[in-house]
View 1 (cartoon, one colour):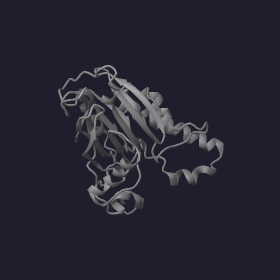
View 2 (cartoon, rainbow, N blue to C red; view 1 turned 90 degrees about the horizontal axis):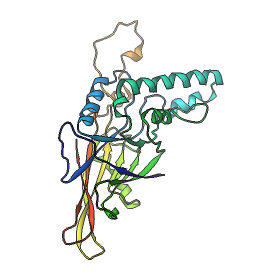
View 3 (tube, rainbow, N blue to C red; view 1 turned 30 degrees about the vertical axis):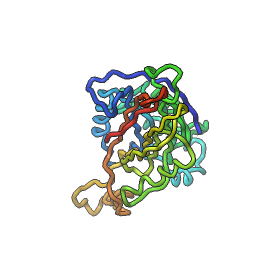
Length: 294
């Protein structure tokens, strides 16, 4: 697990957008982009990025930035000769450059880091395309999972209980029912303490607030909100077209794996989370103020 503490300053908002009272930052996790897939929604993602930047968001990468290569694809290609593997390395870097230049360049310097997903490519030097994308975006590579302590620069000095702690993992599991996507995320509450728990992977865009009760060191009973979330996707599960000529390769008429398995299409996009702090009534201590929006 990667552990990171970051001091976060507010970014200016061109468009005022308040998710929570006493908000000092907005986090938008972005993952499961699957850049390179057929019918990729380039304009929709670019519009979402502009929306987020206009509202002063910071970002966290949740894995699967490229559709190439899944774990199955990687296992097939392990026996490639070095020269062929180098050609794939070069093509993969070019694909990362395209994603950066076409869509993500305006976000440079505004990422807490990028997690790794199950779609990734390892170069011959044992680094990955995710690390290469980190170098383009100027951020940390967060590996499999990360716990990030966000200290807002306007928080009262010495009151680290006001920090927002984020636990993020690319994710495991899925569900055919929307509520079921949160089950794996809720499991995390049993073994790690955080304020915001994030998972991608299942392509669902859903979150739920949960309130925990506790007693402050100076004896005040209070509630502390925790958020669990699946962080959405940019994978277009269903794309329609008319019948193609019978001389066209059959796979061009087949749907994505989502359509082939009759999965529900996901609502493309990313949630966002307002982060602030508040003093507990009757206590000298503080707690995070967090809430989410779609």
